[in-house]
Image (tube, rainbow, N blue to C red; front, side):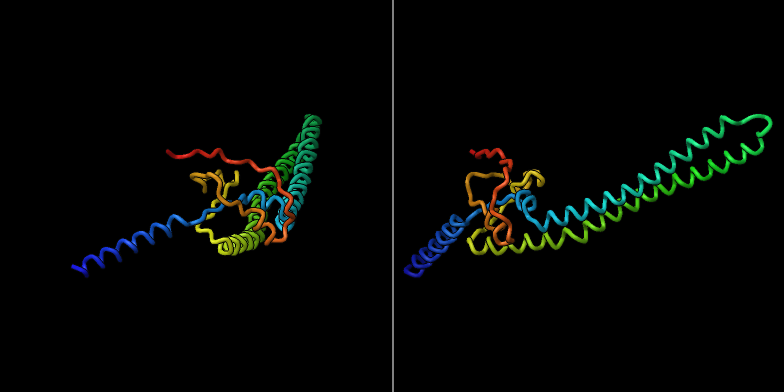
Length: 196
């Protein structure tokens, strides 16, 4: 009987300890949009990608201008068509049509290559930044004894947040860990709804 009572107390103690441990789990949240929006490394990467996209677009625009000029020249040549020069003008127009089709294909190929090049550059440059942020989040979370951290950023669609009522915002600590200025940017806050 004593063993049974002792066993019940041990079981009750373990159950109570488990509940107390679970009740003491700490939650935190951060806004990754704010972190990436104020981080100079992220701005540099974004600028690099934007410059690449602008360069590619300028090349495409140059080809489009060439296409428009050749089309205009062909249309003007067509206006000069007469019975006397029909054979020569028709040959020139056929050649112009071939050149225009070739140029149109080159423009389409250039657009596809530009899209691919920009996506490749993004895949090259963004993962190291994301890894740095993840490492900083892990370190801050461990230092603060947090069990869970939610991202409240709008770009995440608030999908990582089911309920938010207070908690500890570690955005500033992560920014500090990454060497980002602590000046906060205005961020949209999710509408927190309490569950009954």
